[in-house]
Picture 1 (cartoon, rainbow, N blue to C red):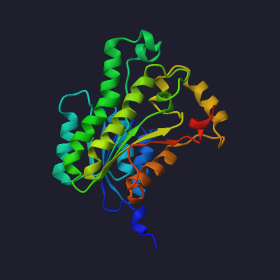
Picture 2: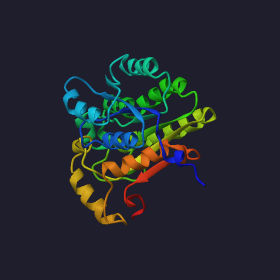
Picture 3: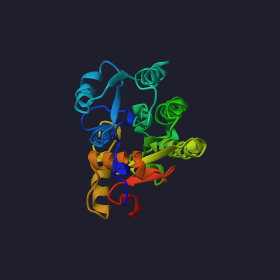
Picture 4: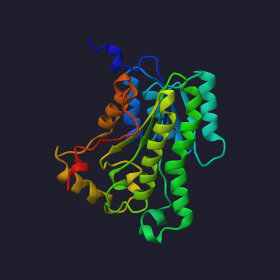
Length: 259
Protein backbone atom coordinates (compact mmCIF):
# COMPACT_ATOMS: atom_id res chain seq x y z
CA UNK A 1 0.00 0.00 0.00
CA UNK A 2 1.24 3.48 -0.84
CA UNK A 3 2.64 5.35 2.15
CA UNK A 4 0.29 8.28 3.02
CA UNK A 5 3.39 10.40 3.68
CA UNK A 6 3.86 10.57 -0.07
CA UNK A 7 1.15 13.21 -0.06
CA UNK A 8 2.35 15.18 2.97
CA UNK A 9 4.62 18.15 3.61
CA UNK A 10 4.34 17.78 7.37
CA UNK A 11 7.48 19.14 9.00
CA UNK A 12 8.90 20.44 5.72
CA UNK A 13 10.30 23.96 5.47
CA UNK A 14 9.59 26.15 2.48
CA UNK A 15 10.27 29.62 1.11
CA UNK A 16 7.72 31.56 -0.95
CA UNK A 17 8.99 34.55 -2.94
CA UNK A 18 6.52 36.59 -4.96
CA UNK A 19 3.25 37.11 -3.11
CA UNK A 20 1.95 40.55 -4.07
CA UNK A 21 -1.58 40.21 -2.70
CA UNK A 22 -4.35 37.66 -2.14
CA UNK A 23 -4.78 37.18 -5.89
CA UNK A 24 -1.16 36.12 -6.49
CA UNK A 25 -0.32 32.70 -7.83
CA UNK A 26 2.34 32.51 -5.13
CA UNK A 27 -0.38 32.89 -2.51
CA UNK A 28 -2.31 29.97 -3.98
CA UNK A 29 0.89 27.93 -3.72
CA UNK A 30 1.54 29.07 -0.15
CA UNK A 31 -1.96 28.02 0.89
CA UNK A 32 -1.48 24.59 -0.65
CA UNK A 33 1.95 24.12 0.95
CA UNK A 34 0.48 25.02 4.32
CA UNK A 35 -2.56 22.78 3.84
CA UNK A 36 -0.19 19.83 3.38
CA UNK A 37 1.60 20.71 6.60
CA UNK A 38 4.63 22.78 5.58
CA UNK A 39 6.15 25.56 7.66
CA UNK A 40 6.68 28.68 5.54
CA UNK A 41 8.81 31.76 5.15
CA UNK A 42 7.22 34.50 3.02
CA UNK A 43 8.86 37.57 1.51
CA UNK A 44 7.55 40.96 0.47
CA UNK A 45 9.06 43.34 -2.07
CA UNK A 46 9.35 46.53 -0.01
CA UNK A 47 7.60 48.66 2.62
CA UNK A 48 5.03 49.85 0.07
CA UNK A 49 4.08 46.26 -0.74
CA UNK A 50 4.22 44.99 2.84
CA UNK A 51 0.62 45.85 3.88
CA UNK A 52 -0.74 43.89 0.90
CA UNK A 53 1.39 40.82 1.57
CA UNK A 54 1.26 40.67 5.36
CA UNK A 55 -2.35 39.41 5.59
CA UNK A 56 -1.47 36.57 3.23
CA UNK A 57 1.62 35.71 5.27
CA UNK A 58 -0.45 35.68 8.44
CA UNK A 59 -3.13 33.51 6.80
CA UNK A 60 -0.57 30.78 6.06
CA UNK A 61 1.09 31.12 9.46
CA UNK A 62 4.44 32.22 8.03
CA UNK A 63 7.20 31.75 10.59
CA UNK A 64 9.37 34.30 8.82
CA UNK A 65 8.21 37.42 6.99
CA UNK A 66 11.10 39.14 5.30
CA UNK A 67 11.82 41.88 2.75
CA UNK A 68 13.24 40.67 -0.55
CA UNK A 69 13.88 42.83 -3.57
CA UNK A 70 16.26 40.80 -5.72
CA UNK A 71 17.64 44.03 -7.19
CA UNK A 72 18.74 45.33 -3.79
CA UNK A 73 22.23 43.99 -3.04
CA UNK A 74 22.23 41.57 -0.15
CA UNK A 75 18.47 41.21 0.38
CA UNK A 76 18.09 37.76 -1.15
CA UNK A 77 21.19 36.62 0.71
CA UNK A 78 19.76 38.00 3.96
CA UNK A 79 16.63 35.90 3.46
CA UNK A 80 18.70 32.74 3.24
CA UNK A 81 20.78 33.76 6.23
CA UNK A 82 17.54 34.04 8.21
CA UNK A 83 16.38 30.63 6.96
CA UNK A 84 19.68 29.08 7.97
CA UNK A 85 19.51 30.63 11.43
CA UNK A 86 15.84 29.72 12.01
CA UNK A 87 15.65 26.26 10.43
CA UNK A 88 19.13 25.20 9.37
CA UNK A 89 17.63 23.59 6.30
CA UNK A 90 15.17 24.12 3.46
CA UNK A 91 12.97 21.62 1.63
CA UNK A 92 11.47 23.73 -1.16
CA UNK A 93 11.56 27.24 -2.57
CA UNK A 94 9.16 29.02 -4.91
CA UNK A 95 10.26 31.81 -7.26
CA UNK A 96 7.22 33.72 -8.55
CA UNK A 97 8.57 37.10 -9.57
CA UNK A 98 8.94 38.90 -12.89
CA UNK A 99 9.50 42.46 -14.02
CA UNK A 100 10.11 44.48 -17.16
CA UNK A 101 10.00 48.26 -17.70
CA UNK A 102 6.56 49.26 -18.96
CA UNK A 103 7.82 50.85 -22.18
CA UNK A 104 9.72 47.67 -23.10
CA UNK A 105 6.92 45.36 -21.96
CA UNK A 106 4.17 47.04 -23.95
CA UNK A 107 6.10 47.73 -27.12
CA UNK A 108 7.40 45.45 -29.85
CA UNK A 109 10.12 43.02 -28.84
CA UNK A 110 12.39 44.26 -31.63
CA UNK A 111 12.12 47.77 -30.21
CA UNK A 112 13.03 46.77 -26.66
CA UNK A 113 16.03 48.45 -25.11
CA UNK A 114 19.13 46.54 -24.11
CA UNK A 115 18.73 47.96 -20.61
CA UNK A 116 15.10 46.84 -20.36
CA UNK A 117 15.82 43.39 -21.75
CA UNK A 118 18.71 42.96 -19.34
CA UNK A 119 16.70 44.13 -16.33
CA UNK A 120 13.82 41.80 -17.21
CA UNK A 121 16.21 38.87 -17.54
CA UNK A 122 17.94 39.68 -14.27
CA UNK A 123 14.76 39.93 -12.21
CA UNK A 124 12.67 37.29 -13.96
CA UNK A 125 15.22 34.58 -14.73
CA UNK A 126 18.68 35.04 -13.26
CA UNK A 127 17.27 35.61 -9.78
CA UNK A 128 15.94 32.03 -9.94
CA UNK A 129 19.52 30.83 -10.40
CA UNK A 130 20.63 32.97 -7.47
CA UNK A 131 17.86 31.47 -5.36
CA UNK A 132 18.91 27.95 -6.38
CA UNK A 133 22.55 28.63 -5.53
CA UNK A 134 21.63 29.93 -2.07
CA UNK A 135 19.17 27.09 -1.45
CA UNK A 136 21.62 24.36 -2.42
CA UNK A 137 23.60 24.19 0.87
CA UNK A 138 20.36 24.18 2.87
CA UNK A 139 18.96 21.25 0.86
CA UNK A 140 21.43 18.65 2.11
CA UNK A 141 18.65 16.04 2.11
CA UNK A 142 17.33 17.11 -1.30
CA UNK A 143 14.54 19.51 -2.11
CA UNK A 144 12.43 21.18 -4.77
CA UNK A 145 12.79 24.47 -6.62
CA UNK A 146 9.88 26.08 -8.48
CA UNK A 147 9.67 28.90 -11.02
CA UNK A 148 6.53 30.38 -12.55
CA UNK A 149 6.43 30.66 -16.34
CA UNK A 150 3.86 31.08 -19.12
CA UNK A 151 3.10 29.48 -22.49
CA UNK A 152 4.19 32.67 -24.26
CA UNK A 153 7.68 31.24 -23.83
CA UNK A 154 6.90 28.54 -26.39
CA UNK A 155 4.36 30.15 -28.72
CA UNK A 156 3.96 33.70 -29.95
CA UNK A 157 0.97 35.15 -28.10
CA UNK A 158 -0.57 38.60 -28.51
CA UNK A 159 0.59 41.15 -25.93
CA UNK A 160 3.33 38.98 -24.41
CA UNK A 161 6.20 40.46 -26.46
CA UNK A 162 9.36 40.90 -24.34
CA UNK A 163 8.37 38.37 -21.70
CA UNK A 164 8.29 35.53 -24.25
CA UNK A 165 12.07 35.16 -24.61
CA UNK A 166 12.58 36.04 -20.94
CA UNK A 167 10.35 33.17 -19.81
CA UNK A 168 12.02 30.89 -22.37
CA UNK A 169 15.33 31.71 -20.68
CA UNK A 170 13.78 30.93 -17.30
CA UNK A 171 12.53 27.53 -18.47
CA UNK A 172 15.96 26.69 -19.85
CA UNK A 173 17.52 27.78 -16.55
CA UNK A 174 15.18 25.39 -14.75
CA UNK A 175 16.27 22.49 -16.96
CA UNK A 176 19.96 23.16 -16.45
CA UNK A 177 19.44 23.61 -12.72
CA UNK A 178 17.65 20.25 -12.59
CA UNK A 179 20.59 18.62 -14.36
CA UNK A 180 23.26 20.26 -12.21
CA UNK A 181 21.60 19.79 -8.82
CA UNK A 182 19.88 16.47 -9.51
CA UNK A 183 22.80 14.41 -8.14
CA UNK A 184 22.15 16.09 -4.78
CA UNK A 185 18.49 15.13 -4.84
CA UNK A 186 17.37 18.67 -5.67
CA UNK A 187 14.56 18.84 -8.23
CA UNK A 188 13.55 21.85 -10.32
CA UNK A 189 10.29 22.63 -12.09
CA UNK A 190 8.80 25.38 -14.21
CA UNK A 191 5.08 25.72 -13.50
CA UNK A 192 3.07 27.17 -16.40
CA UNK A 193 -0.42 28.39 -15.50
CA UNK A 194 -2.70 29.64 -18.22
CA UNK A 195 -3.65 33.31 -18.38
CA UNK A 196 -5.17 34.63 -15.17
CA UNK A 197 -5.84 38.00 -13.64
CA UNK A 198 -2.91 38.79 -11.39
CA UNK A 199 -1.04 41.97 -10.61
CA UNK A 200 1.77 40.89 -12.94
CA UNK A 201 -0.65 40.29 -15.81
CA UNK A 202 -2.16 43.75 -15.39
CA UNK A 203 0.99 45.24 -16.91
CA UNK A 204 0.40 43.46 -20.22
CA UNK A 205 -1.51 45.50 -22.75
CA UNK A 206 -4.68 43.77 -23.95
CA UNK A 207 -4.27 40.80 -21.61
CA UNK A 208 -8.03 40.57 -21.05
CA UNK A 209 -8.44 39.61 -24.70
CA UNK A 210 -5.90 36.82 -24.30
CA UNK A 211 -7.73 35.47 -21.25
CA UNK A 212 -11.03 35.33 -23.11
CA UNK A 213 -9.44 33.62 -26.10
CA UNK A 214 -7.60 31.11 -23.91
CA UNK A 215 -10.75 30.15 -22.05
CA UNK A 216 -12.51 29.50 -25.35
CA UNK A 217 -9.64 27.40 -26.68
CA UNK A 218 -8.88 25.39 -23.53
CA UNK A 219 -10.23 21.83 -23.88
CA UNK A 220 -11.65 21.93 -20.36
CA UNK A 221 -13.48 25.16 -21.17
CA UNK A 222 -12.01 26.99 -18.23
CA UNK A 223 -8.69 28.26 -16.97
CA UNK A 224 -6.88 27.49 -13.77
CA UNK A 225 -7.27 29.53 -10.61
CA UNK A 226 -4.50 30.19 -8.11
CA UNK A 227 -5.52 27.27 -5.89
CA UNK A 228 -5.37 24.88 -8.86
CA UNK A 229 -1.80 25.97 -9.51
CA UNK A 230 -1.01 25.75 -5.83
CA UNK A 231 -2.32 22.20 -5.53
CA UNK A 232 -0.14 20.94 -8.39
CA UNK A 233 2.93 22.77 -7.12
CA UNK A 234 2.48 21.45 -3.59
CA UNK A 235 2.02 17.92 -4.93
CA UNK A 236 5.36 18.16 -6.73
CA UNK A 237 7.02 19.25 -3.48
CA UNK A 238 5.89 16.02 -1.80
CA UNK A 239 7.37 12.58 -2.41
CA UNK A 240 4.95 12.13 -5.31
CA UNK A 241 7.26 14.39 -7.32
CA UNK A 242 10.39 12.41 -6.50
CA UNK A 243 10.90 11.07 -10.04
CA UNK A 244 10.02 14.28 -11.86
CA UNK A 245 12.44 17.10 -12.53
CA UNK A 246 13.36 19.62 -15.20
CA UNK A 247 9.91 19.68 -16.78
CA UNK A 248 7.60 22.53 -17.56
CA UNK A 249 4.31 21.55 -15.90
CA UNK A 250 1.21 23.06 -17.51
CA UNK A 251 -1.75 23.89 -15.26
CA UNK A 252 -3.96 25.61 -17.81
CA UNK A 253 -7.03 23.55 -18.63
CA UNK A 254 -5.21 22.22 -21.69
CA UNK A 255 -4.70 25.66 -23.25
CA UNK A 256 -1.15 24.72 -24.23
CA UNK A 257 -2.32 21.93 -26.57
CA UNK A 258 -4.92 24.04 -28.37
CA UNK A 259 -4.12 25.14 -31.91
